Length: 308
Image (cartoon, rainbow, N blue to C red; front, side, top):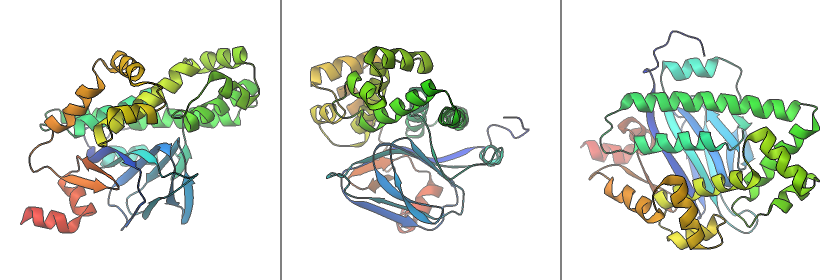
């Protein structure tokens, strides 16, 4: 993106993974920051352009400062489950990025493994006790914004192209995003788009660079990683909820992917939790990492008590 704005003019006020298995509702005055929210598992309902809309995996919401925000998590298809990444940010670079092209509050994107990894790393840096690398947070946030642009363009071109192969891959992406945490076979994906298994496997690999199994596993591992960090569910329960048949298999692929065990990841947030840090209760889990400005916006009474 061309421009003269210094890249350090970016401020990240909050970044986390939010997971709900109990009914949850929030409404607050128009945020003074940009609010990004990406649904990655389950469903919820959110206010979009004055109407309550169903939000599903792959749905990206970006609210400008001053736009009203309302979110509801309730029962859908017999269960309550909603997982999302969210962040609050501001700054001249973000404003310039937002105004660089026509944008919509609600759009669908691919749940790309690289983009999810960026969001995870941004969350990790935001939650560090000593944020000794603010430039890294700025660059990660800018990289995330630019990667969201790329994914939105790819999604748009794939949906509008007359080529049947691209349409098939787009539909396979949608099906995997929706069903990745359930038992899923390659045959199911191929059958959904009406292709043979061999044709579906070849087409998906050719156009995405991932095999169907690799892409599904990335979605499962990303969801498992965030549940380990931000929920109190035991590791065996998380493995089953994220589509892994046995804990031993989950442990093996998790360690191969992240270089450490699920148990070690579970320990890290506790060890890194600073005394007196802000802890935000959201639904049936706890979140941290809000700046003082964001804390005052979300919970003005608590922030007042903190300052007094």
